[in-house]
Every structure is written in C-alpha cells, then in structure tokens.
Length: 120
Image (cartoon, rainbow, N blue to C red; front, top):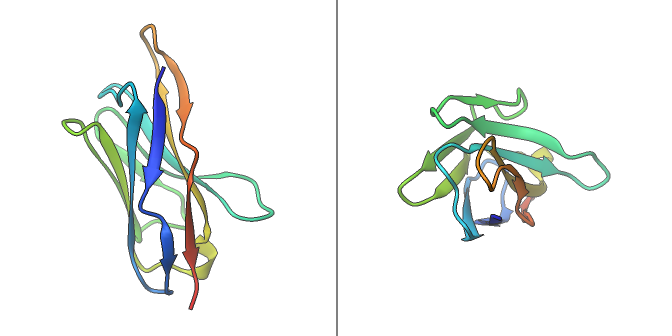
C-alpha cells in the first residue's frame, strides 16, 4: 500500500505562484507510477489537471496549460506541481494521484488533498 500526502497549498494573490509537492508517507512513489494532479473546486466535480508518465511525458488540462508544470524526482520519490499566474478560478483542493500498473502493490492511490486559495 502507498499513502500519499500533498503539501504546499495556501492563500496566494492572483498572478502569484505556488509549488505543490506530493510524497509518500507510507510506501513510496515508484518510477513506474503514472502521477497525476487533480483538483476539486467547491460545488464542482473533481477534474484532472496534469499528468506525468513513468517516461516523463507530460500533459495538461487546457485551463492550466502554459501556467502549470508537473515534474517528478524519482530519487526523492516526489512529484511537484509548479503553478504560476494563478487565477481565482484555480481555487480548489488539489489531489495527488498515483497509478501503479503492476506488482503486488498495483492500484490507484490518492492523497487527502491540499487547499489552494487564490484571492486578493
């Protein structure tokens, strides 16, 4: 089993930046995992934000493309989401997700989320 934990959320003004981190509090993030960030705003469904594959290929939702960057550090068993030019509509709880396709710990793992609030 893997337990993920996000950090780095907080209150930021529009146009500001935040860097979210995702690490494993139990187990570890494997280099074979596909890692995603999702978010859920109040009253809305959870939506996918960004993905990075085991091979380092990235993709982004149109709403964050050009502003957010997902990265991973396999040596540190961590994944990051650099968020720049933040907008009020980016306000949400951000969740880290690991999809492990094989092995005895294969499965889909989620963190509890970290709150990001963009407001003046």
